[in-house]
Length: 324
Image (cartoon, rainbow, N blue to C red; front, top):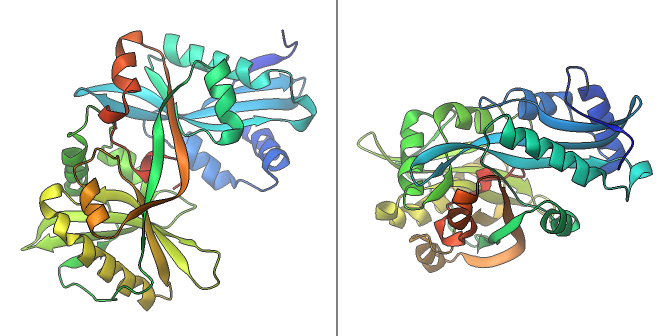
């Protein structure tokens, strides 16, 4: 048994948390980003447990609240986030102790039904062996090389700064083809995308006679080639009946970005393999590629296990992860 103290986050702990983050990851996390991610989440805040050795922070585990829609019922859930152990305390089972403590609070005191996440290869073994996690699937990227694609503006595609209920209704419509999805209401999506202090998202919408027919939310990442960017489609909000709009979105977005000095080489996205739109993304030149991502969950309610463990039930997109 570890002879140290585990307790939930208390106001003021963030200074030590940010200090530990820099020690563990050799880069800084801004206080603004920390406040946005853990203090401003409209669903629930400060879901963090800490391991203290006196006044020294030895370990940290945090999750971020989400809502899940499972068979048309809304449940409280969480996205697994930052795990950190001070290098002086490695190999002492700190992460397992912290996760057990936090999960116990989520399940027994706060009514959460599960934690989902995308563990990397360094943590995947520990999640499965020690934390009662189960694998759901591998999320493969769909990637389209657009280096030779035309840059053509479309008169029906507009860029907007704000997410509205119109956008939420389309995301909702698409996700309802699946039994399980992150429930993205307006307040959550405004927080997730508009308020994010570390990322710039572009919302491109296609309108016909002022009616919203579909949209993509994208962000750009610099590639390894100087002056070249890659586009990541964070929300694939083009319904199946309007799937033929995909080439127009690519041409227009490439044109728009080139006008502001960004030159995309690829478009990238996640799309569940059994999404009816998947084969049409393939038809339009998207191919499986890149580094696959492990997707898993820790159940707190055995009644939901069978539903959650079947990958065919899940709808997911880049915005479900904390990376994109």
